[in-house]
Image 1 (cartoon, rainbow, N blue to C red):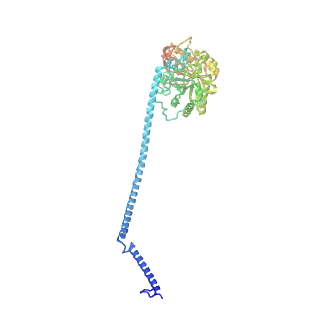
Image 2: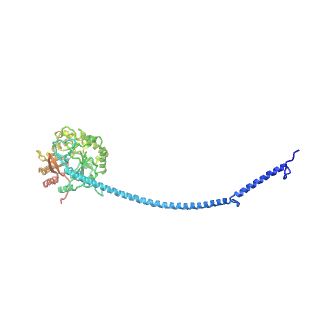
Image 3: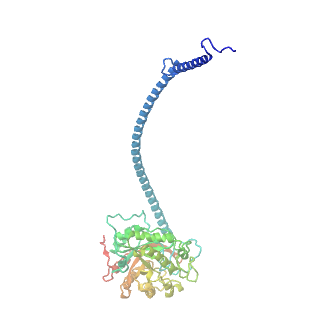
Length: 514
């Protein structure tokens, strides 16, 4: 038999095992409790290092909270300061913008003044140069000329007509400005201008209609106020509204001689590259022409345009031929009429024809080449009544005098006959004058007014006088032709007598002589 398995503290083996298990469980519970007590932060038995860490954490949190509060206060202060600065900056920016605008405006004014000064100086120098260098012309033609210059083709050696050699360009000695007025500028209707109830007396002077000093001086000597002022313009110039405005401010009709070439071209220059009639017809100037017409419409004021005058001569680049069958400036037969209609149609598109009296004005036929003297040739250059409001003539009395009776009929008779065969339109002697050379001027002026007073010439509604003195070459001889109305006392007296004769039809405003 085996020994029983028991200990001294348990009577049986089973009890011993139960007792050992219970003791072990109790020991584990005590160990867990001790561990909790020793490691709890709030326990008085907790380790010193642990307590110190918790205390530091609380202090740091308090410090950070305080710093955060201070920073938030600083942010609010900075935001307030920034708002104040932004308001101040906005105010300063507004003042700066205003100051900048003022400065820019002053700069613009300075630039405009400088530009005006430069333009005035250029115009002055150009005018002086033109007066100093103008060359010879042909009898009966109005075209001012300069001294001969090299050109690609030469002019015929026999000059058919004589022409004044300086044209008034209308360019002012100072910058033109629209007339200052507190009331709108008014003018008669175009219809009443085209069909006037009294005769017209016009003048060309060097500066009118921008400067009326010479114009008014001559008018005062005549004792009558002209009701037409003539001036010239080229296709390198924009429309100049100041000319039309200044004229109508004086109740004077402006008539522009509009040349399809640069205004500074000398009248001995027949060839103008880039201004050939076929070039115009190609549309090369369409933008310019449309803008010119628009600018006329913008004024709302009527005017006359004598476009590419003296087209039956041989001295301008818009002439078709030289009288011997050769083309001038690359032009073809029929091109002149085509160009006239082309330009007229562009003005119609822009509404400018409601303000423009179109003046078709050839040269007197007396001394033209034989082929150009005929009625058929003149007719080939006429655009037709639908495109013309007045027909006119350029004609001068000047040397050389060959079997010349110095009369109105001799100067204008043959040309008037051809005009009347073409149309019944009113006739305006668009550019006329007489030279003092030879001593025939006063007699010719008397004949002029006698001829205009004849019933058969009642369709002549007036004339415009080329009122300048010009030095030029005539058949190689340098001479001065004084075209002015007041060139001599007997000339002036003849003119005054003619224009003031009762019944002559000039209803002009008298001027009291000083």
